[in-house]
Amino acid sequence: MRKSVAPNGLIEWSPGRVRACTPTGPVVEGRGVGEVVAQVPGVATAGVALHRRLAFVRETHTPPADAATVRQALAIQMAQQFPVPVEELAFDFAAEETITADGRPTTLVAARADTIREAAAELSQNGCRAVWYVPAGLGAAYALDLAGHQDGLVLDRNGAEVSFDVVRTGRLRHSRSVPVGDTAEELRAELQRTVAALECADLPVFVCPGIASEGVGSPLGTGTLQALASHTATDLDLELPEVQNRRERALQGSRKRLAGLLWIAAVVLGSLAWLDRDEAAALARERNAKHKATMDRLDTVAGLLTEQKNRFEEVGKLVTVASDPAQRPTDVIRYVTNSAPSGLWFTGLTYERGRPLVMRGNAMDREAISKFAANLAASDRYRDVTIVFANDAKIEDTAVIQFSVSAFVVGNLPLVEKKAPVRRKR
Image (cartoon, rainbow, N blue to C red; front, side, top):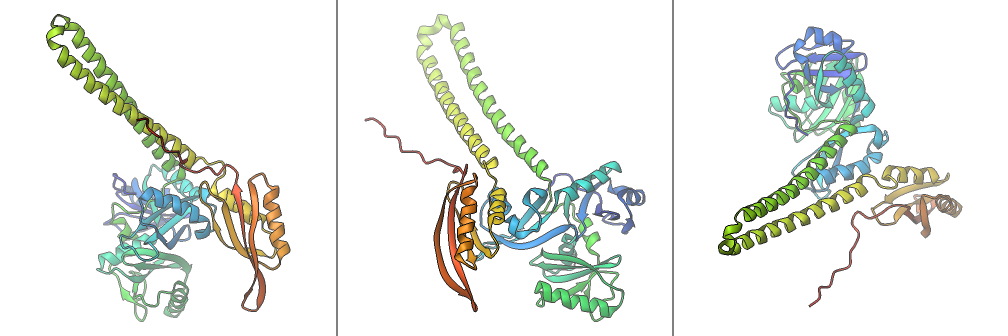
């Protein structure tokens, strides 16, 4: 999400080691925010880049839908994308306009919410304010853009570590930082391991200032930190969950206030019309037709506003059901996985609002499937637990049982209840 306030500097933060710079100044380093602020006073309002070891970057695909819908879908998928519970994460995404068979290529970034809170607290203690939080690897895309490139594997040194950032079509796809020695042999060896792990052998290699580029890659004119500092706005911002919730509540409150003001306006207009009519009582006979037409129009406006108010109330109920379900999807999936006995694993789970939860997988024997179904049935979280099928199969030379189990999640209400059509009397 783009912010209206532009930062005047950049701080790369990690516990016990902080770097900072302005768009035109050198990079300074210290053990904390206080040390770097004393050397770079221009970072009082700063963009914050989280060290690559503190931020997760994943490449995924999302449906061609609005941002709110995509965010809800990603929140459900986060349990499979990151090794941290969803409720402990701050995340954001940037989707391309291109639509493929799998959807829109999307960069998904996340960090522990407690990490951002710790960074914000240290900045606040030293008189600094963060405009946005992003992964430090985002600077690699900007460094390539400044050099006129859209794709590449960017290497940059950060103390004893070297960062490896994969950029495709101008967007950060993967990011890692590992300790690497100062010799070219050590750098080339780690580069080979990174290319194999991230499957990016097709990309050209670029190195930032501070790394000997001979035999490694093409040199870039600026480092990733300075490149990120030169951008006043980004497409990504790791907002804390409570910040997003406050913004959503403020938006809902403004909508309700607008509906109330419109309703009051209709009442005031009706009252003014009535007072005008009372003051013109002497001319009532001559102007009766005009007054009647005026009141009819106001009644029509009042009726439209009433319908609008009712729609706002229905939307409010829908938002309440959607944002505060009886059981959160993460709790449902966590309990299902905890209920699985030894010798049983899942290949897929389907969970939709208002519909049964469907779990598919493999088991070493039928007893494990029966035990799993019994565990679910014994819980007050599920009802109507049914073994849909359990078929013999083989995975290579190993005999397994492919199964499907369905259960209805208690309190899993649909977002919109189906209503019978109203028949009008003729």
